Length: 288
Image (cartoon, rainbow, N blue to C red; front, top):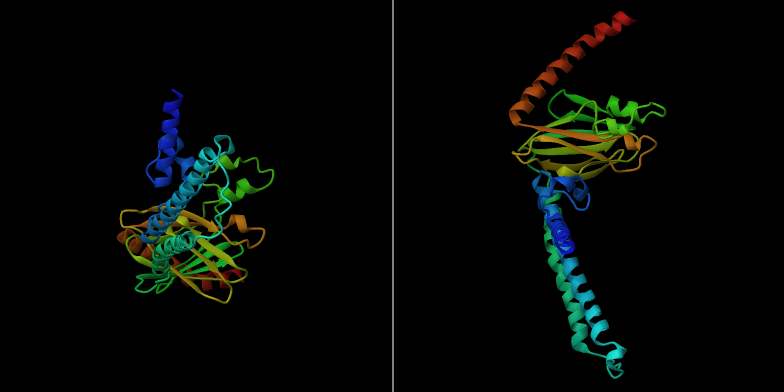
């Protein structure tokens, strides 16, 4: 019975590290042990590179610790082992332990360099969005349209975060990871982000998209992603640069929809904001 349980546990661990599907009873827990595949081509390749490096490290550890354990068992003093004091130098051994790590590093560096080039390729984008960080939220401006969105922590998370609010954070869906206005993007299209800040350094990070880029005042960083056409949904991230007392209250929520749904949403949002801008002078005059 114990062997069967151990076998199931080892099989589950191997499946988790290999990126396979997990049993329903432990999916949320196992997800924290490894990187996620994500929903973009770049995030998938980042995961594959991570797994390659992981298994290389596993193989190295197996060889090194295997030799150590074998030496401890079969060359111990109780078995009559005698230290060899004559071996002081071996050119062959030095060549081997120098060449093998170099080959391993080169073998890992080549795909890593190719991936870095792909990550930083922001050309041929189909939609550009200006992302501006501020204390504490995000502003999204769709380039080529008048649509602009201010995204802050949702009211439910804000209320639960107040001291003596009496609201349990566990009762709030996506506590500290929900916003009042989501960033809406189409699937299957390359999105380019122009990321900056108006006060201090922030960092725009959504792990499912494979994007993490600093928002620096006075400087524009670029990032891009393409969500797979069959992966519409909601993807969450956070600011990952300590930016002040409200740093924990700067979530990022990206809502991916079909291109047709995105066009309809963009037209509706543009019309609503144009109407609001047209009524703004009259409302200001009336209030004065």
